[in-house]
Amino acid sequence: MTAPKPSLELLRALTDENVLRVLMAHDRLTRAEIATRTGISKPTISESVQRLERARLVVDTGERTTGRGRVGSYYALAPHLGTALVASITPQGVVAEAVDALGRTRGQVRTALHADAGQEAAAEALGAAAARLGGESAGPLRLAVVSAADPVDRATGRLVHLPDAPFLVGELDPPAVLAGAVTGPVLVDNDVNWAARAEYEHGCVQGVDDFVYLHLGEGLGCAVVGDGVVRRGHGGLVGEVAHLYTAGPDGQAMAFTEVFAALDLRRNSSTAVDVPKLLDILDTSDTRAERVRLALARAIGGVLSAALAFADPRTVVLGGPWGSHPRLIAAIEEHLARSPRSVPLSAAALTLPELTGARARAVEELASLIVRAAHPTTQW
Image 1: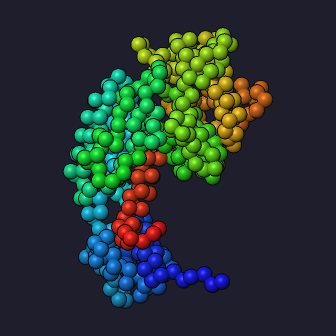
Image 2: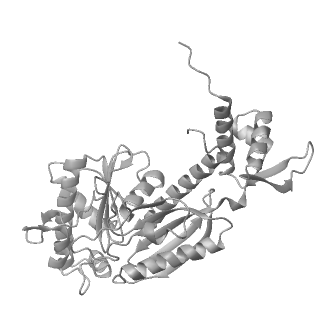
Image 3: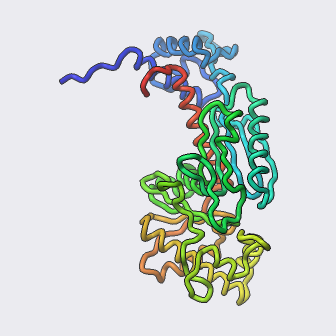
């Protein structure tokens, strides 16, 4: 049986998508350059550019080619197509950016917070940043991607408060906070999940489809990537390892988060890890420092043994302010070498990986919105 031929409308939609996506990779191109990069004939590209101009998705920049031969016009995405909001909520503050479909940052707002700032302060900072960036953008904020240093409910995008969590903002509801500033969807996920995506796409585990990313900072978190996909679980709480039982300093079983209390490595009046104090110990070479390193390696090794049993990763990435310290990694490797199952360890490669991961998703989603705008009734 002969397969049905695609409709003319579908062929036009596919051509228009190719034109839009190649313009999302370049500031400006002539029709001839678009044809060369897409492999589509010049007449077909010319018709597509005309359609996209009428739809106000593409504009003639007014610039012309120079030199010998026929003069060509340069085309670009229309400037009013809008931007995506990318936001990171951490104990240090809120960082918000407006990015366009080419991945360029069109504006940034940084608002400092402290670890006990609370839900209202974080919501005010996020909302004010979105309002400012929206007011400065040539077009609307069409969607938002938010990274939060707290667990995130998969169904609602609200942050989840777990017992003994050191941060930050209770049950902050980013979709509700951003509803008046963003015209489209608001995607929210945990910062460790975004960091894992960034390392998978741009960092130390490119091409590795099964790995675990363990974040060790003021807070403790884990992302599990299987078959190239971050596993979030029914409620979005995969990787919340703070209360997983492991070996304490004296060998007695205790919750992972309690190990730091037993080692006197918590900030005063907080369950947050005292990162400067811990880094000082990792950089010191005396007997006490060695004892603490061994205790940390044993506790982290217990957490990783559970990850190996349930996720069967090819490798483990250690990230966060102290997670990638060479002495710590060496101690963990030595501990795991004596375990029934071991796995290679890698230090995270990216700076601010959570923002990198969220930004990449925002650009991807914005590009898809623009493509769909060209043919809103076409089934993609």
